[in-house]
Image (tube, rainbow, N blue to C red):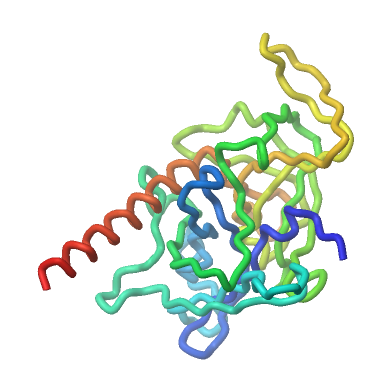
Length: 277
């Protein structure tokens, strides 16, 4: 069974209050490169259970999640990827009431993206979007009306097992108009709830536009499939519109640095605590 690599990079997540399932969504792993630390990223409204703009509770049970369930690809010897999943349940709050998730260091709660640091074992496969390699970015030049794909779980649905569905739409604006104070862009795509937290990519199979060393736009032919990781899908601008908001990948660089720093500080604090025992 052949599975495209971006398909493997979208993870199905569920939010719970105790044993009551409140919602489902999508998450993904990000890292700088193959040697760096990696963290899990999803939307802030997924873990808070509240509308990002209004603060309104999103659950019909009028409850906020206190746990998250993540469905990873299980690492089972001699078994193909995409057939087995490892389910991990994690609390969203520490005993002192502080959240486990890390918010954007500059934008804070205004950014609908958060990171969760995990302790990694060999029992799962880690399929990651890399921020600083050509594996997930070929410096593609994109214009409005070009196709982009949101890879996630609309209404909690999947294509097979816990593999995501590709919803393809169009870039609805120029990417060079992104504002650093609010690093989002719009796409025109018939996406729905459950896709919150989905990676958004531009996926090409034969050719794509790029800039050469002189800054001139050229067409590159490719014998392989390439994609440009553009960001994390957040939701529609309103229920009557197919316009959706995507948090640009530039904001993920800062979020990753904050998550990596948080992880390092906690490791150092734990080591110091053990030395004082």
